[in-house]
Amino acid sequence: MKHFQSLHLVKKHPNSLCLLCGRGAGAPLCPPCQEFLEQRCRLPATLCRCGLPDPAGGCGTLCGRCLKQPPPFTTTHCDWRYDFPLDRLITAYKHHGQLYQERAFAHLLAQRPLPWAQADVLCPISAHWRRRLWRGFDQAERLAHLLAPLWRRPVLPALRRQRATAHQQGSSRRQRLRNLHGAFTIQTPVRGLRLLLVDDVMTSGGSAREAAATLLAAGAAEVRVWVLSRTC
Image 1 (cartoon, rainbow, N blue to C red):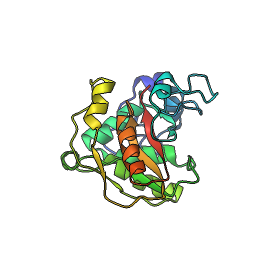
Image 2: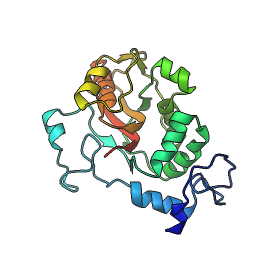
Image 3: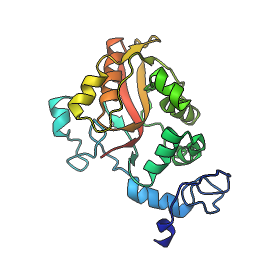
Image 4: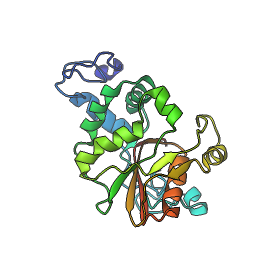
């Protein structure tokens, strides 16, 4: 336990140091930090359609919200809960431009098989151009290209976020969904394709719902969602 009391994000990024504790590891995450992350952040194998833990503990039951308003996507694939210490890696990556944190993500994902063998392409849930300009990159697009060689699927940037949406933090679920209505348009044909949407964090699921609905309306055969982490 003493090891984890000193967890901090490494400000420099030599390849020999663990990105969480800063100790010599020879890998992006040392074994104690990876074990701690697994214990704290690992989600159960069976999730509800919206990506939340299965309310029936693995029986495939939908949560009450999905029963009332089924998402347009078939299911959500996610291994990690958005919690300490994974949330610190994602925040440093997404909001502070520490792109070297991708080494930790690649390390975690290297042994994860493609969750949907029938997927034709990986489709990032794109950010608006103003947000890409402010950050200097699109995290969903970079994650999709990180996954492409691991899962041997091409990246298809089929979605364009045509309308900037306000930051969703602190908004109610109804407000989030209203903010996202009509946010996406299609820039590449998707008719007949089975698409795996890619994003870094799922919160309300509003972006995934709107993106999936847009793709299905354009003729996509099926849409599923993969996210690096899920708030629970």
